[in-house]
Length: 186
Image (cartoon, rainbow, N blue to C red):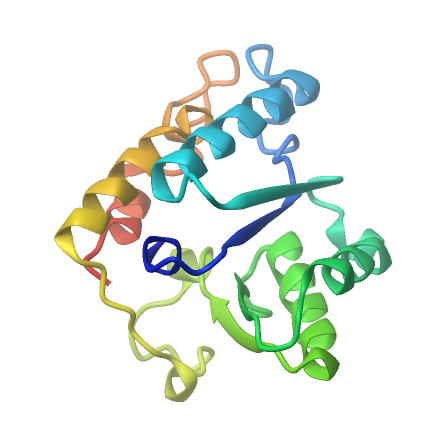
């Protein structure tokens, strides 16, 4: 978000299309959900950085660990020495996030890229000071109010994750307490 606004080229790699997040849903069968998630992420990226490139890998949601070779190959073709890579943390608590983090950590090493691992689902199971989180490696990146407003707009693009599914009776994937964490000033 800040990098793109600073004129740095940005590339976002969508590893999956999130098609497995609503099992048994009549409203969101996997194929329809994947198409909508593609639209949502494209709209959100257009809000955050209209110049960013989006690469969709289309790996099966929930099964990235079975496709690490394809992910590694794609990343080797996209990354250049000196790139900053932001990915999900290797111990995040979600199998796709963890597989992606492990592959990124492996691929970037010989390329000389910088790795920044981002906790996503970690905030569902850990609190400040939790011994399972390597706090000594953490950094805080401030988000200025104008960028926070853009982040809020981008988050609103993900309606499939923000609304409950009436056909299954399940709550939103991202409940209000989770979105509040995403919209902090850092």
